[in-house]
Amino acid sequence: MNKNRIIDAHAHIFPEKIAEKAVRSIGQYYGISMTCQGVCEDLIENGKKINVKKYVVHSTATKVEQVGPINEFICDACSKYDSFIGLGTIHPDVDEVEVEVNKIIELGLKGIKLHPDFQDFNIDDESMMAIYKAAEGKLPILIHMGDENKTSSRPKRLARVLDLFPELTVIAAHFGGYSMWDESIEYLVGRKVYFDTSSSLFKMEKGKAEDIIRKHGVEKILFGTDYPMWSHEDEMERFNKLQLSDYERQLILWENASRLFGIDD
Image 1: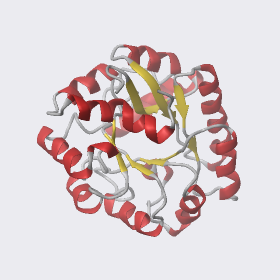
Image 2: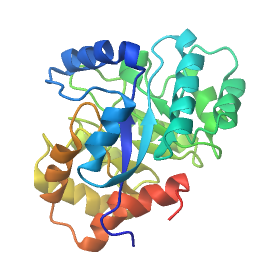
Image 3: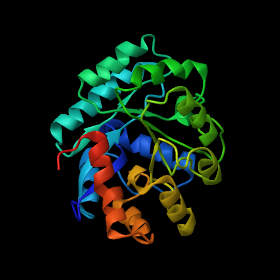
């Protein structure tokens, strides 16, 4: 066990020239006051306060023409900062899905991030099936889950995808569905899918979070902050309030993500 070492398995980064605008837009969408900057150096400085050693970083292409530049940006950031593990982005409107997935692999990125609400697709849309097929057995997919105003990322949609692609590795963010945790319990808990803790603990009942962790299986839970939505100190304070054993904490904070992404102990 790697006591006192942490992997933040859910962190957004942006190029410096657009970071301020991007962070402001996210805050406005969710109605949250954003205090973090959304750039690489600020992420690392935030993480140092709780002893984060590795960060799974990503950004989302809301237009198809953004796919290449964003993936190059994430690749460059990972080259500059050895604490970064990068995820690529892909868009439902790409012409050649397998080509784009192979580019992500060639760049050395370790997975794909999808955001149904921002990219304007339903998780179980027919147009998404080619992406899941191309990623199955090759790359894990981190999917934003749940929204109070939309239905595109609801847990039961992901359940249908898991039925169709049994070898697809998925990380269902926000305990399987922000603000839709009862549906996550009904459709996803206990299945072959990872959850992360990001952007949930500020709103969930502590007992519900503990119940999901135990019923789903602690070996399938990853710690994530959703930076720059939240500071690392705030997320760790919320996490530490959960009634978990030292063994369970270390699985969530380090071991599970280390195993999933092949992070050297």
